[in-house]
Structure formats: C-alpha cells, structure tokens
Length: 551
Image (cartoon, rainbow, N blue to C red; front, side, top):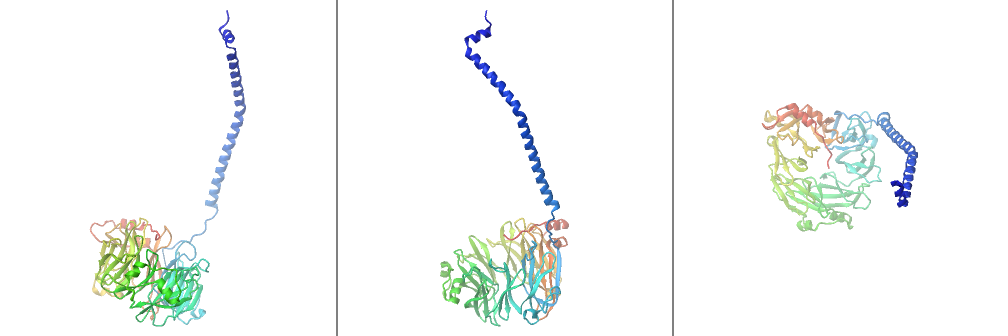
C-alpha cells in the first residue's frame, strides 16, 4: 500500500515541485541575509562614529568661542559720576546719543567759558572767537570722561542735537546751533567737527520761538529741511534752511503777529504739514506749503488740507481757542488714526482732534505754568501729567489722555526754579514718573528758591500710595533728564547745574545718578493709610523695576 506522502505526490506533482522551489528560495534568502548582516553592522557603526565625532567638534567650537577667545571689553558703567567747570555758564540743553559706540548712551551739552577742560586745552581764539565763547562737549555715559569738546559759537540762542543727517553726509547725526550774533552752525555729534557754518539774517532783537522744526525735503536735495520760527517785535516770521548744507531757502516769510510761545509742526491725517503757534488767546496756523511758496515764489509738492483751510480765517489764519486765557503750550499727542494736539492755556487744558480741530475733552485748571509730559499710568494707556497751580498750591495730576479723567492726584508744593517733570517707560508697560518740589513745608519763607533744596520724587502706578524722595539738590538746576543708558540694564538721572544768570559765571556741574542707587537710599513717603508698611520691601520692589526704550 502506498504511503500517504507518495500518494499526494502522485496526485499533485506540480504542487510538490512548488513546495521544493519555495523551500530553496527561503534557504537562499537566509544565506544572503547572513552575508549582508556584517555589512549593515559595519555601516551602522560608521554612522555612530560620524555622529559622535560631529557632536564633539561642535562642543569644541562652543568651548573655544565661550572660554578661550576673549570677548570684546565692555566698560563698566558707573552708577554716579560728575564733571565740573569753574567760572562758566551753561544752557538748558541735554541730548543723549551713543557717541563712542560702546552701547551706553552718552551726553551732549553746552557751556560758555574762556577755554575747554584741561584734557583738551582748547581756547576760543583757536576757532576765531573772542573769550568767553560757547563750547559743545560730549561726555561718556559710562564713566563721565570727556569724549570731545570744542568751541562752536560766540554765543547760542538755540541748540537742537541728535538731528539726523543724509546718508552720504560726513556725519549720521548733528547738533544744530543758532548763534549770536547771527550764525547757523552744524556740528558733527560724533567728532565735534563743524559740518557747515553760515551767517544768518536774524536781527539782534530777534527772539526764537523754539524748537527747530524738521520739515519734508523742500529743495529736492535728498535731506529733510529745517524751519526756524522767530519773533521780532510783534511780528512772527519763518525761515527755511537746507538740512544738507544749511543755506537759507528763499527769504523770510511772515507767519502772523503776537506770537507768545514755542511753535509746533503738525501733520494732518491727509498728510498736510502746518505750523502752529499761540497768538494771545487764539491759535495761529500756516501751511508749510504756503510758507515755501511765499518765500521762494515756486510751487511746492506739499499739500494743504481742505478741512483745515475751510476752518481757518482766510485773512488772519487763526483758529479761536476753545478755552479762555492765553495759550501757553502746544504739544502733539498720539490719537486715533493720527496725531491730536494738546492745547494748554492759563485756565484750561483742551485736547483737540488733529483733523477736525474739535475739542475731545476740556480740563479746567487754575494755572499750568509748565509744559505737560506723557507717560503710562495703566498698561499701554497714555496719561498726561499736569502741574496745576504754583507754590504751596501746586498739584500733580495724571489725566487719562483719551477721556481727560483724573487717574491720580497729589499735592506737591513747588519752587519757582524747579525743572520740568519726566517719565520713563517700564517693562510692565507703565511708566515711572519723576517730579520736583517740596513734600513738607516748615514755613512760607521756604518757598524762596535760595532758601531751600529742590527735592526729586519718584512715583510708580503699582504703588499709588507711595512717593520716593530720591535726592535733594541745593544748586540751581539748569537742565534735567531721565534716560535709559543701556537697553535692559539701567536708567539714570542727568543733572546740569550752574548759575541762574549768564552774566554771573560760577561753577557748572554735569552729574549722572543711577535711578536704582537713588531708590535704594531714598526716603519712603506714604500718601495714604493703605500704603504698605515695610519700607525696605518698597525700596527693594521699586529698585527691581526694569526700564524700556520709547516705542
């Protein structure tokens, strides 16, 4: 009898052959796998070696860069320094710029003396001036060393620094000086070199309604031009100068009469440029296009705003004030879709729509004698600081810029010689505010500037019931500024002190004080009963504030 396997082979011979073929293929595949396994293993080991070798090279490069190659030296920024000049006078002008490229802001200022400091040994006669004359000086913000100084003018009526220059110019930034007698001078901010110096047509009895205004390029030379607004007697005139060469464009142009204070350049939402300046209790307004065409007799590519032209009196170019009293200050402020402007009169503050010229809000104040400043009381919400009243009746008010509502107020008696308040943005999108005045009075006779000290106070909105008394200064303060000297590092106060009269030369001093150091040694003043009690905790908290640059 046949075996079952043999019988199966007899019945299905092809199936048997397929089985053998499949078995042969499997055996061959196993042999090939055994042959290829050593090759794959060798490739895997090579890839591993290459990976770890690359990783080692990367770590070696990082180590060399971090520890062996030395980093460039960065000067230690001192928290406090001071420089002084004997028998000199100074000007209300401070400007900040990184002059020596060490990433620390430096200070530009002016003083009048017979010669420079001992380090530079320059005299007025070196530049053809008689003694005394005006020097421009650049001081290192890091350590107070003098970077450069040189005689620039016989005397100065107006100075504006950090004015951008054309790309193909010898300097990226300049200080523009309007000198006495009439001269128009540009000085390289980084070297002190005179870029240009031209005589001006300003008369001896001409007063300048500062600041120097920068207007669009009118003479097609590729650089923004400069506009100077002056007053002689009752008449207000405008002078246009080339921003590249300093040459006057055309002749003087009459703007109006009865100018009382500083002018302002405003750009409407349609892109039209207008010059605004107070004229007693009304506002004088002239288009830059009209002024250029008047002084040159040529067409201007600039435009007029039809809405403004319809609103203004065609004869006097005046806009009646929306508040009573003489207009003291004008300032551009951010608005919805463009800039609005704040108008401050002797009796009220009015925010005007920058396009419609209609009041957004009015805040009635008794007497505002200083120009307001802006800051952030709430995160990313602008507030305007108003100093209302004088002497023992002065109040500090923070108003919401969008509504005019009072956000914070504090009585803070002031002295006639107190400088303007200041603010500095903090990392929490608020601002630190700095005020001058007297928190405590012993007697009325202390309101005389020479009988007491100027006190500097700091306020931060996160502690509304706290004021810090940072410093007391007995010298006459000519200029004051709070600035961020290093991004994300430290802020400092700059104080320029000197004689009150230019006819009485005495000690002139420029000093830097770190805000953090002032906070740690400050006196904590509680404004209400709900304020925190731990004095050192308050100092520590405010000393840890981080500051940021203006957006």
